Image (cartoon, rainbow, N blue to C red; front, side, top):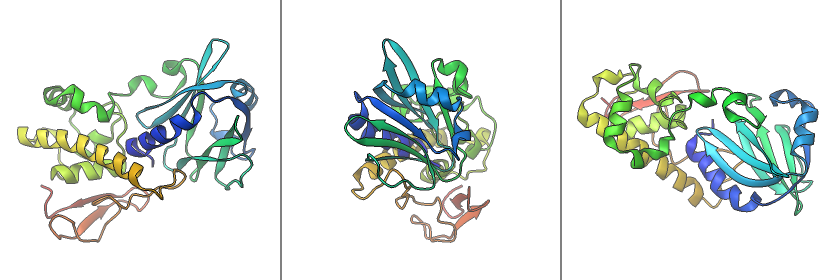
Length: 273
């Protein structure tokens, strides 16, 4: 599932390439139109002829602002487990996972692919009313340095669940999912199933630092990889997530895995307490 670092990297890479360009046409895979939360004729006709004025991210959503004659609309994509983004030359061969393409001036396509058919695509004018759960989204997870430690402590103490669940709760902080919650808790040396109420003040501070550090380093690792493809997902830089059974890079203990390969929870019993 693309989370904050993957989507932030897409935003930084795609924004300079697409902002200011006009959508000459929209093509939707006829077998995948069920992923659109707008009627297909409305989706294709409303987007055509608009200019992409801004590309931004909200939590685990990518947002493309499209303008036409003073009217502003938002193409919002929540990629869920299998969604990916791709820029290609116009007319390049499409994969079976292709959902739709924006045909841009300059002979390029901005494509959305979905390998699980689980993503959600919205064409909205009122984000609060038209995008599922948008009003419940919390502050951006990468905004903690500006918010500060004391703000974080107060917000964290509103929650009672296990820490893995707290981190994945988009109302707590927007942008963290299954993979990066594992990495953050490993960085902070905290077991994922511990209750929030069990944390000491020192552990709260460690968690605060880990959220900012892990997300920032992951984003930079993705951007620094010259072979990274937005249509795929390379998380080889991760310390524990997806590494069940391997040796912990910090203490050498065997990394544990709970749950399915589709959404594993990974942690180290040797150095997370």
